[in-house]
Length: 109
Image 1 (tube, rainbow, N blue to C red):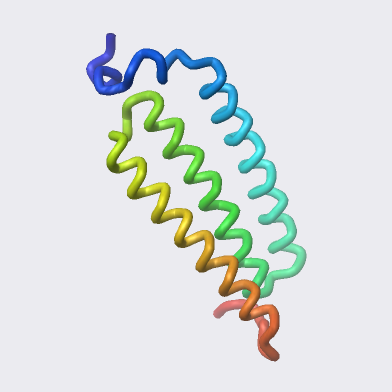
Image 2: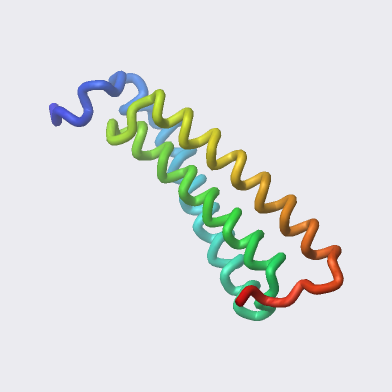
């Protein structure tokens, strides 16, 4: 067994349900993030940018989950990173809503 996988419980590593869910999450979040990029390209405003960044963080969150299952991210770090990403996603969505309601929602820069 690879030394990186020693800390991962075998039941977690070989759980078909968990691996299937993470695979579907990876596929789904990547597709939605891609759609967000297309939407931002068509309408490059600050709210679209913020929502697209939040969608990108969903992809990162799934990547952290997969890295944890395969033993590359320890469980305590997994919780800190994922809850940190949850917080940042919420902040970005709230910022998008706030800036969408403002008078000047021009593109950054």
